[in-house]
Length: 216
Image (cartoon, rainbow, N blue to C red; front, side, top):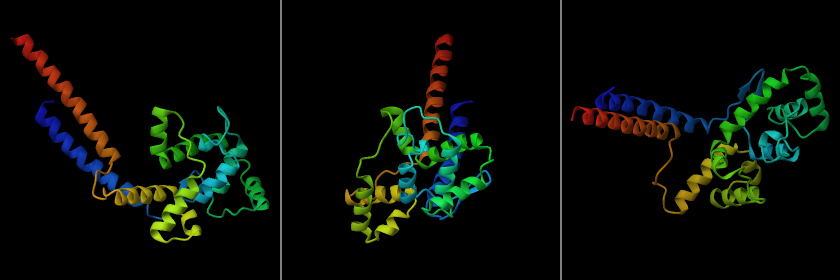
């Protein structure tokens, strides 16, 4: 593949990557349930996150003991807290667990980890470089204070926002308050396409330089 063909392929891939990134950003604001096996899960809100944290769900990573292996109970607890029908009622939780006791729970372990990885991709990416990224002890209060002060929302409204939308709002608020509302925005898929293009372009240049050196 020569430079012209490589650039043409890059432009096509970049257009598609930007389309997918826009679509992904738009999905943040749709209140849709997430299919997981035979279950439908509600969006991960601040409130549901706190319930998972309180039961020390291993699927949050830092919320559990190091090297903690999820059990069937952990899977059923996660599925119940994330259920659209969830309510903080022990009797209802036990009934949910009995009704779903014979699910292939080991299959769900990996699917739940993948779901959490998608929902918290930025935090996980930082964790790869700096170790597990545990939020500050007062992070909920900071989020509620910021959103309530800036937007006038009630505590209940903020606690029932999906975490991915909370992050989007906090990022937008931070940019606006810092005067960078029209600054650089990250586009994960498009950035990946650009990085791959630069690597291939550099490799192509080196290959052409070697071929030219042989001829000379």
